Length: 283
Ligand SMILES: [Zn+2]
Image (cartoon, rainbow, N blue to C red; front, side):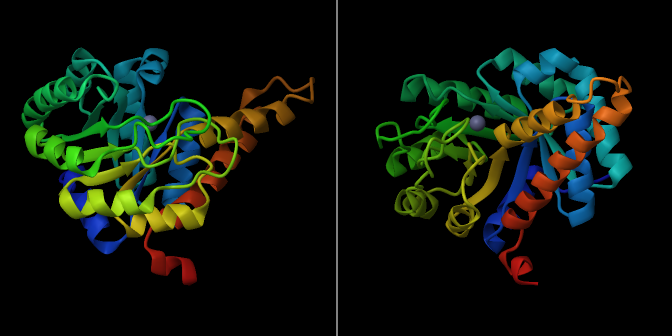
């Protein structure tokens, strides 16, 4: 990896100022990682590589860290490694010690005061590693469509939360959801504008899968500078594999996997073009 790279915190603020965003992609194995890397290399865009606890359990912490580092170096991509949705202080600690650039502590389902306490504690720990900290405030639906504004991030609470915890980045609940949407999501852009106006935090949109490009760009123009993409990566990878496995004769996995890698690459190229500088779209 490059000897001295810009911190993720600085990079996110630069992106926010210029009205663009970083794409944060979850990877699950060598093949999804490779698809992401090929996309970032081709578009010459930086990328955040994310791991959840399940992916860390699947690959092993040190293996996953080394894979990410080796891939970024090999493909000469500017990137950072981020822990996605951890509800455990111990996991945050293990990931920081293993070399993560950034961590998310998700205590959003806990009462406000508890969320402040645990997120603040993570900020103190991460400072020793000069790592970026993301927290979540409000409720981002885990499955299906979020239909009610109950659980949406309250702008004034966001201001207090960022002030008291010192988090660098804040995942906001403004109408996106994790998983598949049953109908096109409607983002609460007015709420986003209010949050952006009164907090200095880098704002993060979870549930980026399935949000139309125009909505993503509107969110980016109003303060979102990190967009998470996970579901669509898993989906396109597995759907493509299904078609590859129709031919029962082939057992060489090095021939079976490449179409799925290419499908991931094409998806990520498209998303990177959407979230990077708006002007690039018109070239
Ligand atoms: Zn998420």
